[in-house]
Image 1 (cartoon, rainbow over the protein chains, first blue to last red):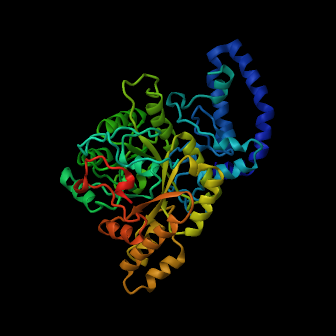
Image 2: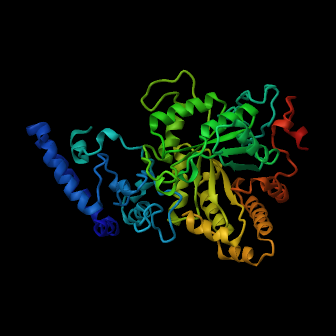
Image 3: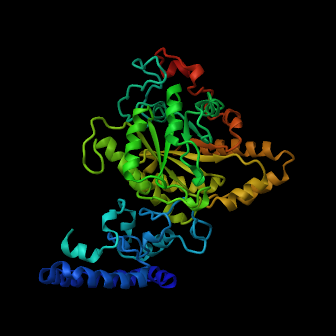
Length: 146
Length: 348
């Protein structure tokens, strides 16, 4: 949802704190579940991840989550799915070139990153998405060290 | 970066279309890199590929720049409109000895097609590459098309660097011979988010950019501020910066450009000057000359990229009037001198 997505960027630091606290617990729990149930957990975990991240970030389930390095603004909402920053066409006021009614996800990303403790990660080069991972869970990938 | 170098080298081939020997510290066998590394003020321009399958149309469009530019960008479906391919234009230009800059946009091809094209381009004599994300298909003449964007401009730079420096495809499969390409990217200091733009530039340098060409610069104060930031980050020591210069035909064109092409910023005083001028076209060229002269004064700027869509015939006069070439004649087919010539003799 667009308004919630923008709320998430404005509260990037809060979300970073929550993520930092919860991430080790979630990964540990998923590791255990993975040992016990194996691939059977894929569908429910992916569904939960999709529901939570769609609500907060309009997540597109790229399978290679970068939110903690992109100011909590999901780069897959960029019409060009750029993974490394804004294109040259950002409009005055920071609106998207392709969808003028939407704020540029990368202008948002830099705003969110500026608030975060580890926001500097936005400056690191991210390589293109592995298309085999689209639709899969980033959480499970972390749990399985894929 | 400005090591003493020669534009002409005793080992240079007589055939203007043959690759030059790669000089120490250079990555490509091209003239454009020699100009930049010699510390000369470089001038590049843009060739709009024809809607044609006739090579003569390409050569005619290149000929108007003869003697006034060091390299010619061949655009890749700019504005998401269909034209002759950038690679086709480049192949025609290298056969005549020109130094084309191959523009590759990520909009139309995936990583398999792009890597293949980079090998093909290098084999056809292309020495310089400009990596772009590309305009969205929705703004062009085929809005029904599927946008690809498998890579983005930064991933594309990293890909080209992998091919060149690691002699392998992204898959890891080794190459028998690597594409010797000077890698370039675009920057736009004149669009939001302004604070992030210098870091975006830094990211491109980190991914392999050795030169950058900017979007139209009509605001010298903004260019100065941006270059100060770039110098502070040490970027100008690792990357040549060519600032984009546009030629405006009238106040109406300026307003249209500003509204139709997102990311183009034209200060009101420039539009006012065009509005007041008795001959707006001549005034537009005068503005371009002044911008080139002012940009050349800014530390860290290595050249200009003149974009004069539908006014290409004036590029030569504009560059000459600016005086930034210091009397230097850029390489052109009719001035090809195969005799080894030291730079000091050529430009005393």
